[in-house]
Length: 507
Ligand code: ADP
Ligand code: MG
Image (cartoon, rainbow, N blue to C red; front, side, top):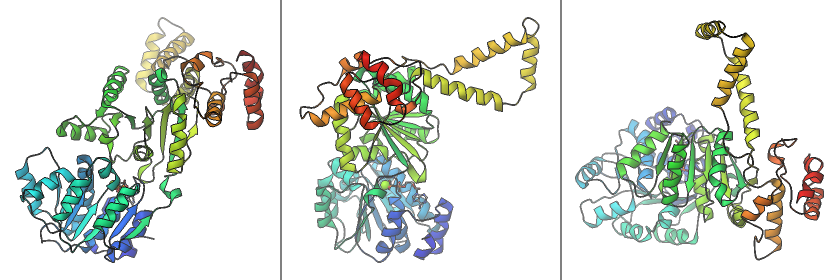
């Protein structure tokens, strides 16, 4: 299917071309024809699947322009309002449609002026209700879209939304989009939609396969070390680190800054100006690491985020879906990495079940492993670098006092220092330990009696020699029989033969 199949007007096709869209995403392919036919619609698809264009394009296609506010989009947060209006502006500008963004914390007069000139408005519920109720603004939209409806309900906007609809015309096309479909959403849909069609992108498509989902089991006090090591190892392009609380965002931001990273943080207490500035600098690549709470990062659309880190696993599955949806966008590959303590393994299992996904357990690379990788990168760089005249000059100068081998050794030492990997060698739990914990969590209803610090202290230290099997590395089980039987069941690779005998005795 191509965008040509929708028979959009020329101005719209031009906008689609300019945006660089080649073919419709699944939710677009399904939703656009139904919306063009004039149906109300309820659409469910994961974040990053192109829902904005799924409603934006067919609505703009049907708009006539020059008759006040014709389309109203309601979104949960200011950031999202700005993003969605940017996207709609792109699609509408070739047809001369004006877009206005409406959210709290900014002066009324300018906003009202813009609304009065606009064909499309994108609004957050609070400010919109405010404007409608006080009669400062009267609108008659033919198209009303609730975007990220589940977020709005999560944020407690149900009353505002119901109230807003009392000010809207009966005669309208209403569309509702959501990443998840809890019962409350269905109830709301029955109230505001008329015989809606529904579009659901099936589970396998919904669990974005472009996102690799990994988890690492660490003791609570190891989280910072684990994060640093993984960032060192994964070398992310841009990454977002999610925390549960503002306090954690602040602490981690200071910590990461002290470690020499360019960090920006985002949470609900920040001034609007500051938030916009922060998001822009992240988009432009001026900061490499973004540290945020769930609420602050709702709907955040930054295209080239390579990694999402969950510093703590979120409490609910829907947050998990939203968080990891910040990476793997627009067809790019991404990795979502979750740090859990042993007693959070059950949360992993619950989320996997809720979301219909699988998170893969991996072991945090040792300092040595990261060092070996980085040294390898350096060697490759040496092999691929072209010699510059200035480099020759420097060696010539050095040769007055030293022989060439000494010079080479010194230079190698200097460049190696640049990529020095810090921290303790082993962080977190090994493969067999995690397996044992998962088994035990299944067997004992009471949960993880063996979780926590005690275990990691007892762990056998098998770093250094022989154990370079990356993810499959076994850092040794604790008791002989248990790890023995696990090995025979899992039987794979080098695990049994390399580590089995030696480490088991130490357990
Ligand atoms: P969602 O609302 O489902 O989270 P968005 O509408 O924000 O997703 O879209 C995510 C990103 O994908 C945006 O940057 C958007 O411009 C881009 N995008 C949407 N549809 C397409 C398409 N058909 N082809 C290429 N990129 C697209
Ligand atoms: Mg969206």
